[in-house]
Amino acid sequence: MKVGFIGLGIMGRPMAKNVMKAGHELAVFDFNKSAVEELAGLGAYGATNGKEVAERSEVVITMLPNSPHVKSALFSENGIAEGLSAGKTVIDMSSISPVASREFAAELEKVGVNFLDAPVSGGEPGAIAGTIAVMVGGKKEVFDKFYDLMMTMASSVTYVGEVGAGNITKLANQIIVAVNIAALSEAFTLAKKAGVDPNLVFEAIKGGLAGSTVMNQKAPKILSRDFNPGFRIELHIKDLQNALDTSHSIHSTLPLTSQVMEMMQALKIDGNEKDDHSALAKFYEKINNIKID
Image (cartoon, rainbow, N blue to C red; front, side, top):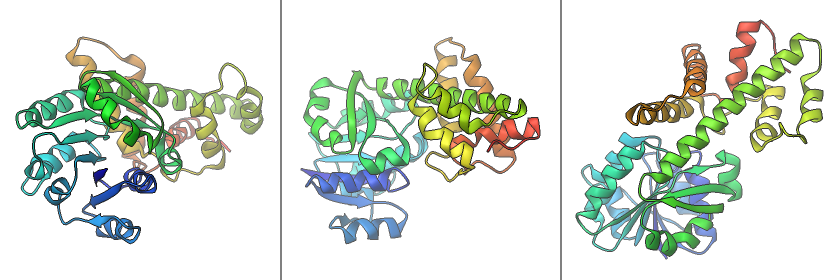
């Protein structure tokens, strides 16, 4: 299959590599020229813009930071839309506003182009290993057509409904992850202040009801103070803002999400927005005057 891939960041680059490993013909573009050169060195075609990627591909995958970036990649001069024709498909794997996903889908449908919103979960480790989880909204027949392609990057690809449903599901995922990391940091703070080794607490509880994938991935980072980003705080802030905006638009309230959002904003004020979201622990360390390690 002729596949285009736009957005070769922390997640996009290994995802694109996994598409290539599965034997697909790949054209790539990113403003980061070194990322394009790396993929070209592995056999991809390095395009000069999104239009060129779309012209060479039957399906274009985008993996970008937020709604405005996707909109620009699609509809700016020499963007993806200029290279699309009826029957082609865009799979947006970015985590963006579901409202924006629906707007993009409606605009592309005018020219006969299909659109799936297919955000992912699993962070950089999952992207590298090809074990991300993908939640997909759009037409079921389009999902079925590209299921195998998406599975080259993932351990699970799940259809969740019409366009926008993928990003609603991702927002739910991001709420759960954020609140879990905050709860984990809070629990380790309690242990540390009470004179109990947080490492031993982790070993004791990870196999019980409190155990989770979030705990298994993030507790070691907190305990070793390794806050190199797999998923940056600034990106999680973006996701939580999308969750809050969406909730307000449908007259729902998210009190726990709001609390964690304020913690992340405090970390951003302290200059930690590029850290991994496990650095939520730093918020608890600061207000309790301790180090969790």
